Length: 275
Image (cartoon, rainbow, N blue to C red; front, side, top):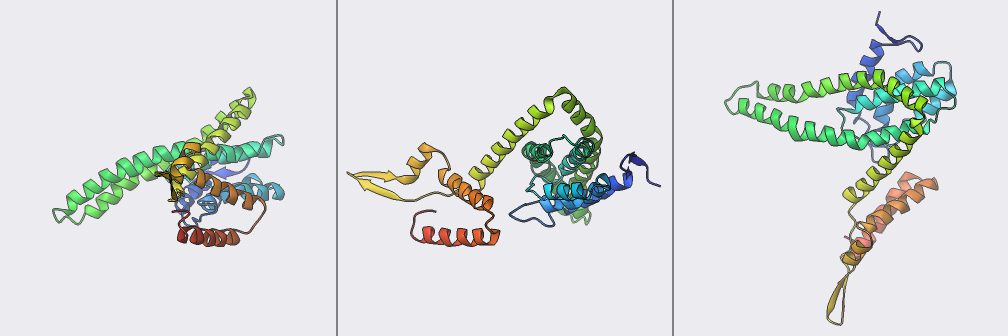
């Protein structure tokens, strides 16, 4: 019999291992609406079912919460899964618990953990692993690919395993103390600010809409983009994002929004309004 991790909800080490292995499918259903959201829900869904075993409506609401957009470096993601489950238990036990804080905390952790994960896994471990693998392969040693995979994936597997363990066990203690001290509301508020800031950074970094329009007035060349940048850097990207967000708020179908983006982008691109 698997060792009990939480007797109240019947959560065992087997459940933790299930989350661990399911976390490897995080990118399996990646899409540009919820990104890793479906993979996140898939990883924690069986344990959510145990937490809300006697509350079908609560279970459905929890599933709906975790279908929201989520995107981060995959290795530290089980840490967020553990904290999320700890918060779901608190929501189940306290009817006055602010469930919006769950996604606020998830979003607030996405940026910092992704920064750490990208630095270590893509900036350090990948380079070291490739260097080791290539050094073996350059001498004709068939172990080169295996050395590369081991050097990269051992830290990956360990980070996932201990991240989930720490997130679930210490997450409950940390969040309980925050709630009792009244700091949870402040933490949620700050997490929301961090999340919005992260979205703003994504808009500026990923969209990159610019205008090549230029006019000559009295011998002076007026570049539209330079004036727009003086008003607000990446202003066109921000406007496009806000328009799409307004469409989503009005429940316009994603397919229609995508087709509209393609049509408007094509027309404005051909006419030279945007680049």
